Structures are given as structure tokens and as C-alpha cells.
Length: 155
Image (cartoon, rainbow, N blue to C red):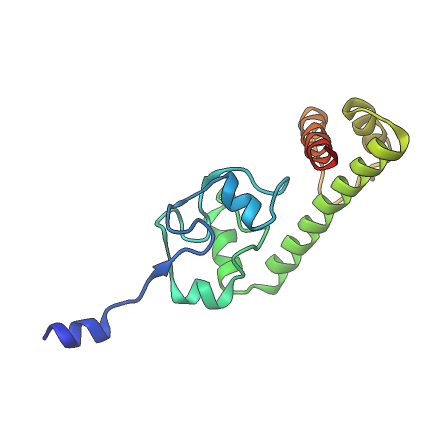
């Protein structure tokens, strides 16, 4: 009987995002090139179990930026199920983050602006109906992280 139980046992693979730890750390973030997009925390890909299901492995890219542990469970399920609207929302969110990174890098390198000045300028031009909005203090902190990463790359 052990042979048959082996055949019908539900297969779980080690998680390619957290490498089976159940926790995404800075090394994983660097390996997946998600600096400035993720923070260390429980792995959303395997739901902190360390094992990814075959369905997850076949339906969701390991580096899907939008799939983070702070999303509501319903949103995570939509991503897992390939909901087009949710996937599009994730792509828009990633473009938004990319644009802030590029905006910051440009103004820091070419205009010699600091985090506070860049945040003030960005917020003064932000559309009131923008799909994503940010609070000033959070934006300043994020811009500072972008600047720190940029400085570490320039050194």
C-alpha cells in the first residue's frame, strides 16, 4: 500500500520565492530583483508554508510584484485564479512604482533634489483622480530608500 499512497499523495514543491523558508528575506528580494518593491515578511507565494502548490507554480510567476502578504485573501485568490482585472491592477501598480523610482532617480541625479523636495514636487503634480495615491510621509520615506539604493549602486 505505501506504493499507492505515494502515487496519490498531493505534491507540494519547495517555494521558489522564499526557497522553502516561508519568509522572504533581503537575499530573496535581491535574487528576484524586487528591491524597492517588496519588504521582508511572510511569503505570499506559499502562504508562509515553505511549499508551493503545483497550481501556484503553473499559474503565477514567482516574481509577481503585486502578490504580497498584505493583500486581502480575496485579492490573493484572484491572482492565483488568473483574474484578468486583478492581474491588470497589479501591472498598473507595478508601473506606478516604477514611475516613482524613475522620477526620483531623475530628480535626484539630474536636479540634485533631496527626498523632501522630490516628494513635494511629485505631490504638486499628482492628479486628484490618480488610481494610486500616497501619503506624504510614506512617499518621503520611500524616496529616501530609492536615493539610498541609487547611492549604493553609484559607489
